[in-house]
Amino acid sequence: MHRLLEGIALVAFDLDGTLIDSVPDLALAVDAALADLALPTAGEARVRDWVGNGSLVLMERALRHALSHSGKASLDIAVEVDCVLLERAHAAFLAHYGRDPGAHTRLYPGVRECLDGLRAQGLTLALVTNKPHAFIAPILEGFGLEAHFALCLGGDSLPQKKPDPAPLRYLAAHFGLPPSACLMVGDSRHDIAAGRAAGFRTLAVPYGYNHGEPVRDSGPDGVVESLGELV
Image (cartoon, rainbow, N blue to C red; front, top):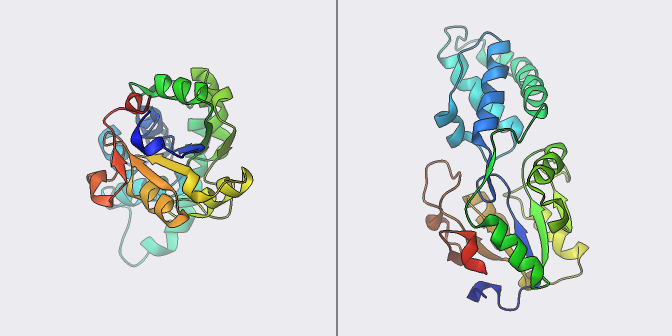
């Protein structure tokens, strides 16, 4: 057992960039939504840097980039039209992504072994993601992992989402555990900030989506190259 699991009863995982590489599907949906609005597409590489703060922020970043490269926005009207375009773009994204959110999504190496091993050891597993809750079940079911998690929280499950610590505090209270008996595992500074503020132990993986910054700079309690190292 990894040293960071000593005294831990609950392990909370982020989803995108931690357990799964979902960017191929997210990028397809982002570009389809932009195309619906006759705006320039973004491409997978850019979307990879925009993921992590929920679907609305993802589409806001994509929309701002597209407008700046389309010649359709001017400084004096961009703010005025932004909210209208964002609502349309976000709705289009949700529609496109919802058709098959796991078509090109893959588990990272070591994830299945980690989840199976921790579950076998009797640890409670939970999921805390900023992805809309409606997309969680189809993705987990596609990998046969839906039974591994005792509770899944999406970005719209509570009024707050990461980096706010509220979802993690909710988890600890839900299972009647002190925060010190809980571990947050994620790929971004938002996961580490939320975990630290909630009083959780924190563990980072370096391969995910952290806006181009090394996640080690966020000061997690530990870093593993693969989640398989936990078991």
